[in-house]
Image (tube, rainbow, N blue to C red):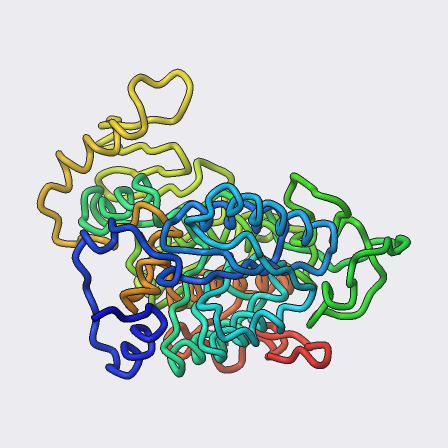
Length: 444
């Protein structure tokens, strides 16, 4: 008896939370077009185009729709997807739809999942709407613009049972997993501190007004953010190949703290075993205009320090672990056991990581979630209904650390935090630190 993928998924949701584990031969089998996961890409900037290519090249996924508020970018990403399928008719239809308004995608019952690659200030609203409509979500990091939105997203995942993957793809890179397994298994002894290297916080937007060019729905670009005149710094015209600077402004992002910080602080959380927790105190530096130097203190006394350095650097009583993209070093007793940091180093990253894993993690007490491909892990979980490697709890908690650090910088005050309840400690700060004013009708 044959059964359609959609009917299968409907039956699975009725069965409840029992995990479904399918044999590997099923994953490797050829998927018929009607059995594929119908995807929509919402946001057609540089990251949106990159992720769409990843989904296009997975046999289980089929991109059926794209969305962007800029007509030029929207038409271009539609062309890329349509041409892909035109040259591979067995993979899907070249009739890829394009929309200006994401709500038209949300209303389509034939779309199983969406990939949200908009600016940060749109993440929560779109992801929540998609999940309430029965769709799974791959959402770029940081998970949301503020902590209130993160809590709402957590609540919706719990209520709907949807799969949500945060785009913190460093957890799907072996150097980061092995680094964190070394730390979690005590290979470098008791951890005293972690240093994370990334840029500074965002600033209020004060960009001058520019003439609005045709083809951009500026009101929809702003969405929940305050109404302000157009600036090409926020939404560049044409097909840009850079990451725009909207993230440098508080109204739309959190600066490099929520950009690279969302990557490196995520790894610090993983290595410290704090995926369901976070710091209890966030201390700003003494400098009048601080960009680095903030300290996040955990209830076990470990300090995570925002500092210029290697990437993520764990300090233990017996050694050190350093990790960044394409870089890894393992030290014991002042001696470098293995590592690869680029030009000038012998061997390769893979060889260094494999050696350490074989020699020092042969029989670990703590074995972390293994994912070799972040997009594939999401698609696996859409079908199995298991949690992805960076689910809403992981992505939400890591983004929360970023937002707390930003608030310490913005207000130049120590922030006291209750991680279990995800709220400011009594007598600390203001409620506006964890939320924002939403422009109608986009309230989260």
